[in-house]
Length: 130
Image 1 (cartoon, rainbow, N blue to C red):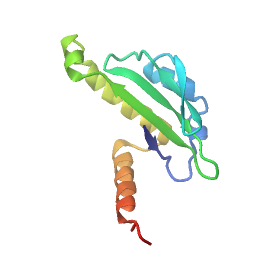
Image 2: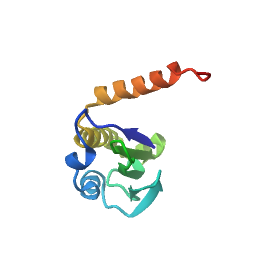
Image 3: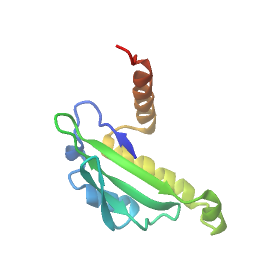
């Protein structure tokens, strides 16, 4: 599960007032919920795009700090997708993921990547014996 931050000064609930509807617009019908860090996330058990096997997404709530977008894209093996003749769906899957993340967080792929790098670097620079 990956968690994504919003742009500075923005909140997830302001950008996406109806998370379930947003997920269904991009990926298909929500079939279940799954608990993650005390928050119920939406599960799309049979996504519209054949590249995806399952998608879990929603708001991860934190007390005292901003909520984050939690997403887990479970993809089918590429060999299976190609064997079924759905190779063209791969590009659509990448676009759907990027568009969904950008609409929810307000951050483009480069900005999200840079933010992930910074958080990993911050973790690596923190000495264990302080």
